[in-house]
Image (cartoon, rainbow, N blue to C red; front, side):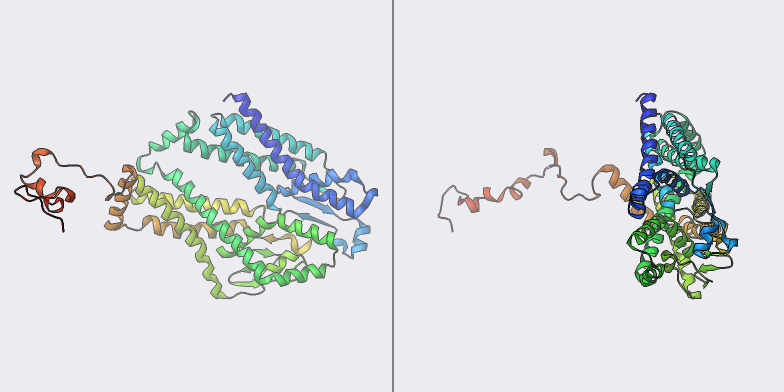
Length: 463
């Protein structure tokens, strides 16, 4: 495929990804403007509000300054007039990352992944520049530099990651193939890079699934607390809809908090607070309905949940080791130890990266520290995953297991089972026949007994 066509398609992908994110915000805001303000609404503020929220959804911090009239109307002290919002609704950046990864994979399949990634990044950055320069809301300020760099960075990382993974798997006839060949030249350590990345992906999928399940169980068990906070807010149907949509955008953030809780460090909901399996220390919590899911107390026995990240590491170690044995590579303990260390290190890096937008400030004063601590979260995930993956990757294998895997490998390559009862049996060669055998193996319907012939040629009635 021509590079120009790849560049055009990648540019269209980037434009669609940005447009979808903006439309998802613009559509409900338009309804809000219509029902809340009516025909006399200030429609000129609709687009700037959408742009500011789009930047905030891509982890751009917002500096909030409340006017004196609003402080008096709401009854807030002057010390709370200025604060920062930095805990991002990660649904937007997650969508951008996934859309970019799909675009990068398509560009890699076309054989020009570098051109595709560059074209998509330029278009997405240009849209970010347009949104940043046209989004000015009174009392809300965002850094123009971060407003451009952070959305573009999420897109570039997603597109580059998708392109490299696809090119590494299928080949690109260029840079990735040369790197792949160089890594293959490491001997027994050749599979370390690919298998560490594969194991990290397995850990991420397992922990994300468990974290999402934990949030769902919390909704079932503590749904009444959420309803109570909704009622205490005393909002109408329109306000309840806005709050619900906002909390849905924060669901990926809540999953990160849940995984941090399962790993042990937990998270904070204010300065000097802690929510972890070892115990819960909370002061005054904001009346946001989603905070009703936070457990009020816990027991030291709940620390058993830290075995879940260990189990995720064990699952990744088992799957990686099975693949290594199947391909008969990296069978020594040193390469397998390197793979276990790589899985743990990359898992810790991923944990730190997802914790950064999931933590920060949500208000003035003590609410300036909310969410998991990236360092402690990464350290806990790294150590727990290392224990689980090392157990499965470094444990000795018994002879029966190796023999069974060799049999399965032979079966897959031959395309049939080791003992195929339906396989045709070759007829013996005529020279191998023993005299008289044809009388014993003749078809039964040709026997003299059933045909009614006697040995002397006479015929008698059949019985």
